[in-house]
Image 1: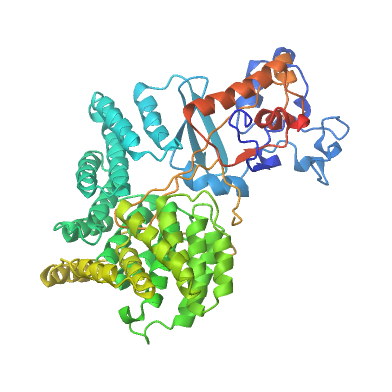
Image 2: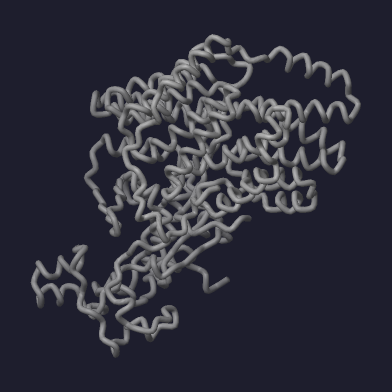
Length: 496
Length: 97
């Protein structure tokens, strides 16, 4: 398989937990003969049942795993009849599997498998007679599975799928909400904020028809996240709406953490860093035992904003944030993020580099960047890595590289929107580079451009927002983490 | 590269909220069954027994690779069991290299 893909070099990990179930003493018996001997009912219970183990394997059976060097286990009963249990492997995949992933197998045909996890069992239900709507949904999920980062073709494919979904009427509303959400996201990627707004609104409209409030709140929060230079008069209203839905509507934990992340991002982009940190921290504290993607993003964002505030001391009250302890928290969060498969390691490496530079440890900062893997996972990773590398060049007085990298950095910023603070920080870094290299003409041109980009948020609007936040209660949590399950467990999400 | 714990087939795909540095790495899990084994053909309970692939099974493994290629799916990591039929499915010519 891998040679056809020209990927024989891929890392391969093998584990006995991925073995097929053990057939005990039935191993090696002919199926048809067995069926005749024990009858259809017993035969099917053994083959398809979740609760009926086959007869245990005897010690002297040649298929006993104790005779096999692959399985060094002291007792045969340890292996016999093990179904896939709640292993580390399965736990690692749980957050994603749980949401009822639909996966299309290629080939033999458009088979949609529903993978659901219930407690300790993994259920795989192959359904070859899927409905046309299910197949369409699989198509929607598959659009992202392509390696291509060609957003234009992805967008046109999603639009075509939306046209098909339209034909199904109301049953397709949920799918159309998902399509709208993906189109909004892709518009964000390419910096098309008008399309972002339009698709977010479309997604919200569909979400309301199917009570998908998580989608709804996330999309409102996305509307509220608008980069510098593109003032959207409705963004505070959108933030208030996102907040309101989060506070009053039922949504699952995963959606909750995604919404909290988006709301934190909206706060951050309004320059309300303290509120943003509170929101992200709150989400981490609440969900850290369940490594939903949103939680990982909150952790990344928290580190990002902490670094930003440390790098720009004029933005904070120095007594308020003791840099040493903040650096320690950043290190601890980074260590945890590094272990989490959801988190882009290149971004974490960039953070580690910046933290080392803040300590004045240039050597260690260089080591952190040595760890940046290829290919980078996305343009956002690229921007973060470029930013860290620019800081590195600045710290080592490598003027030529500094100018080169900041030019690349600023060019990438133009390609898609990032956090307001990163854009500001990147532009300032570019300014520094131009000044260091003595290019005063370009430096003054950049300065004039930056001056023209002042925030358009009015004081009155901000006052409304603060008043609103003050009267709102803490968002409603449908499922509080179980206190007993916390005890005695080491979680990847034990965040500082 | 950083050490990462085992996860399934993982084609990280970034997602960016407007104006954020957030990423939503949606992992794609591609499930590929092993090709036909000697005992599949014979109709025997296999479990942890370790029969080899038949010639048909090896051809199936190659066509699975071609199918992924056609679909433009590029896995980033492969996870298999310890069983020969699975190992021979991801790299049928391993013994020659």
